[in-house]
Image (tube, rainbow, N blue to C red; front, side):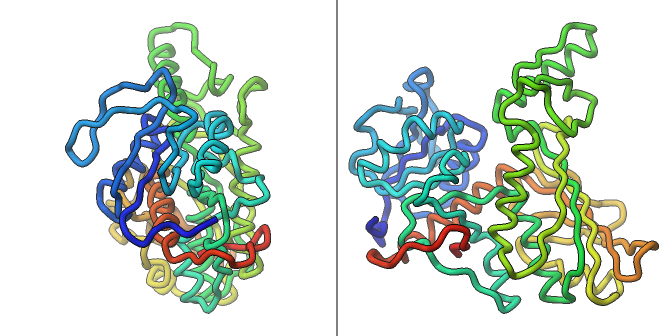
Length: 358
């Protein structure tokens, strides 16, 4: 697969009307990726709709057999099924593929990419293999895996980590606009004593916490949990321990929150732990009256962490609370992936599965 040109690129954003697609478009408008041309592509039903880019009117283009011709990169922010239907047409047209839908993570030529947190591992004296130059499909790592990996990198560098476990509270926006609308309708239905729609989750999400979805929901919550675990395992590799992870569905529209317990190799004052963790893209909120939540994290590039609390039951144990905007973090990781593609050089041997491009 040839490298992208070093100048301005011609890019297709597939699924431009999705929640994630809109966030990627917002990030692209900031100019981190030099664009000569951006095609906003979506389903035939949404084709022709008016939107905007960089303050100018833009039209959503319906996907077609020749829509990818002449383009350098196709960013798939669409549903997994839409990605599966159309990614081959983009590849056959000569596009590099950047997949944010996870539909292509099992393809042999796909590589999981986590450049948003790679510098934290490098600062810890660890570096992943640079396989970006030869991977035909770059799959953006799950945002929760990015966040957990970054915390482990910083703590491993500062103290060493003996054990860790995280409970992660997922928003409905991970299921796209349909998930957001179902939570809204369920909330209205409960307050007005009406039957609850359950097409997306097959369960009551409103005013509830779920360890699993109903039997008809796809993908299942367990499958999503395994994706976070798998991505975290690949990103961390053998550079640190792999923490226990539990994913819970929360009645929240946007933004993840999480509670993470870590046992370090040595005890330290909570302030010292905070100082180690207060490194981009993380930001520790020390003010007891302004601890992070998903409302505060909305639209931020930062991953917000609260004041670190010692665990009375463990001499070197600590509790970490945090929140982050899942759509924003995913879009920023995708931007970093795209920024690294021009520095690739053709002809290098492909990276082995399970290694981490940085």
